[in-house]
Image (cartoon, rainbow over all chains, first blue to last red; front, side):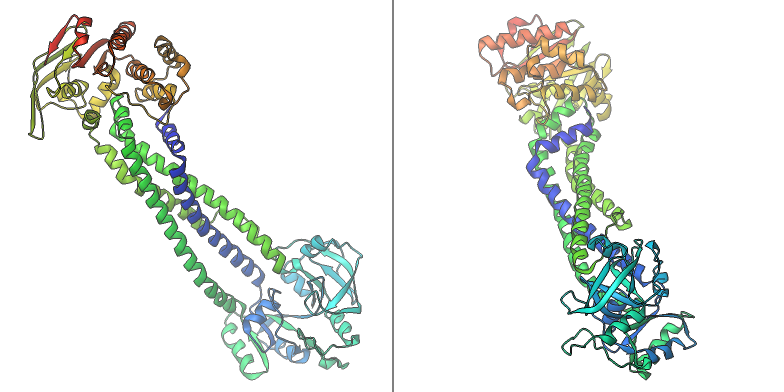
Length: 405
Length: 207
């Protein structure tokens, strides 16, 4: 038996009031930690896919939509641009490197992207099995696609037009799987990648359905009129990021968007909601502190004879006060730990939801710096809410209590 | 072993007590008897070091209690004094055995065989793992005696141990207390208004 064990026994002796304070704290800590985790994971994921892309050029429309579609592959493209115009830009002396990508089809909801081979290098994609494509209609398949759809080397994939599963099937659009990519924790995990030529070929021979709203594909045979969906650009010097996008937006009928700018704009929008929710969670933590204080305060009154007894057995004032603070800390620290567990389950749940809809995986459960702050906050709540009861116990007049008995 | 001189105590200048001098030798038990309101509990708290007198001297085992700090008094108490209260108090979240272990822990001791032998001696060994609120009144009283003697005190102070008991139980409890004191080598001071106890003590003083 020791003071620490006694604290724990006291907590379990009052399961109802202990668990109310605990539940409030778990809720508060859990929500904040969940928000922190999701925010960080989404940001990491976004940044991870942003690497090496300073600017995206595509058709006019919403810049955010352009970024979401051609960098993150989660929105519809703004439209197509002509290959010739894109070439002019990629030849500009400010451009360090450029990657053309084009969309057209999907296979069971996963996008088939026609792209230059540099695209795979950009995301450090490595072939796990098979080989790179050599001919049109040969594809490399990202890790999540083949895991989910159980695709093997040599399989033939019949694509659907557009980016949604419901698109009309091409009879001619039969792709052959020649390579499987290793997981890279980036967007290429959820893509089927082929040569630009494949996409051009397929849409040349295909009877265009005018109702198709995802894409407007032109059907000219001349090479000069071929189109691409977007071009990912890296500048020679970071300075160009200020001037060059504006030039394009003002002087051409193309749109240039800067991913880092658009993403931080997006996070500002998110941020408002996250901030509001975290204020609410902090409020819950404070309420849990109050409930803890009230519990301790009441139990002090109920247990005053008990305290007096412990003092007469020879325990010092200090030991008794320590016991009260211990009781509070045991509750707040276990509240913190349970809160983190709660948030981890929350992250797993949310990521399983998100994987269904946008094919993103967020599973990484490291402890964030902010969560150490949260631990500090929990300890602080524990100390502060037990301070007054502890001082009361310290100043307790045992003789008077025993005489009143 | 206990020598008091001119001990005075007042509560907030309202109640004033002046106690007669006590002189008790080693190996003697003492009955302090008095009506309600003469300061029996106050005297007991003074002897236990729970209160400090305003003037006079209390010398217990050659230590002057009035000169000790509150911390020294706590430490003196746990090493020398066991207290039996009129109404038994326990730590309710703990079992009988755990209450005794807590008392030992406070006195930096850890001796389960002693706990067992005390509980057996008091005939409550089979209640070891019961919470204290599951005990009968008589069992509670015996557990509170166990708590008072678990740390081998040299002095047991008992405050009204028999006031609410019938004649039969009164004499049982006082015999039990005396037996425990003798068995474990402690002296016994009983403070009470219960005149039935007079016949059990050779030495007594009246307040």
